Length: 295
Ligand SMILES: Nc1nc2c(ncn2[C@@H]2O[C@H](COP(=O)(O)OP(=O)(O)O)[C@@H](O)[C@H]2O)c(=O)[nH]1
Ligand SMILES: [Mg+2]
Image (spheres, rainbow, N blue to C red):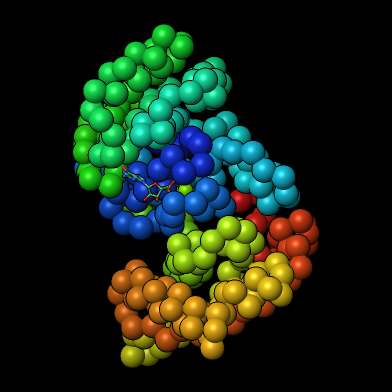
């Protein structure tokens, strides 16, 4: 039996969370086309007969100015210190640039076994794959490269086996029936945030926090959920709600459908929009909203 932790690292939007979700076989992290979708460290656990892989999903690597961004960066750096292996996720479709090879070499230099998942090959010309692999090799990236598509499920078994081969012999770190270290309550808040990321543009989704106030399972098996969408400005609130509440109704309905799929039960959902100016720069509010320094 092999088991261990694997930090999943790469630029924002590379496809880290999507890859973890498909490998684990369940949604453990939300996904959107926008950077900064993942704010917290989240574990996704893959169980097989001969191995357990504990993936550590991280916020991506990118530049940013506010306090929340700084904490997200720190999360990514801290994570690579305490793992058995690194899975570096590279968006193959976006090409190979110098900052990509620099990042890969920086993590290779930490001396932790590392492989590269070169992902999104479903949306790029196949002939570019060997060219890019050569470019990476010539730039000094010594890690093995696995071209995959998380969306189309291409070459994932090979990647999975390669990750397992990097892990030490040992007993599983978690019970074999859990897929995440996060509660259903946390995931429900994340699902709401995912739908906001998908529906609204520009600064609005990045300035939003979701706080789950009520998360109750009734005797008949249905869930009663009440949550606040906290935004940074009054005009953001107006946009979130929309004309006659139409926008909010729509986004809440998408979220409810996904929550029902996730919980496998009927959900009664109440959503409120609140304004807390500049919460992303306020240490006390960050803590209150669950973005702890340790997490
Ligand atoms: N075509 C394609 N898109 C992908 C693939 N993996 C991820 N994406 C998309 O890339 C975007 C970012 O994905 P996400 O997993 O949130 O990236 P993260 O920021 O690295 O966690 C989303 O729109 C995904 O649907 C893939 O294999 N193929
Ligand atoms: Mg992510």
